[in-house]
Length: 167
Image 1 (cartoon, rainbow, N blue to C red):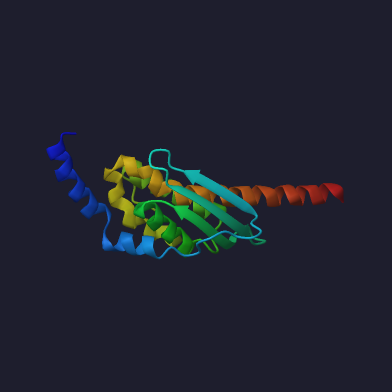
Image 2 (tube, rainbow, N blue to C red; image 1 turned 180 degrees about the vertical axis):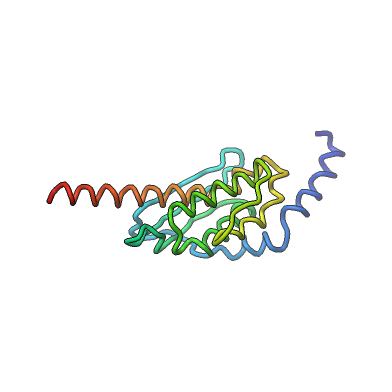
């Protein structure tokens, strides 16, 4: 990209992507930190920019998220996504998290409408679709959350199977 075109592109990208809503979500990321005894931990890193999310979850007896913590080192877009996840994840099932990840990915990559329900706030990131280099950083928190919840669910299933087999 020529220098003149680049200097025209950057202010437009910054104005479009970094709205007051995105910056507010990024600045107020709920449930930051790590859990002392998680049922599952997920980690994702965006290779292009290095944005990283480490997520810990505890599931209740119904397989829903009972406790959650996230350690996110990402750009404002990744932090904004993590903010939405942190606001809505308690009580979510693994299936709801997977649906949110799939809907967010489709919104970014193929013109989908975006997540609904408890993770509908991720729709605030719709303009990121026009900037493919930002997709991975936007997805790190939800992908790490899904990995953590899936691992926690698998560990619970294995524990129940082991207990039943020992009886």
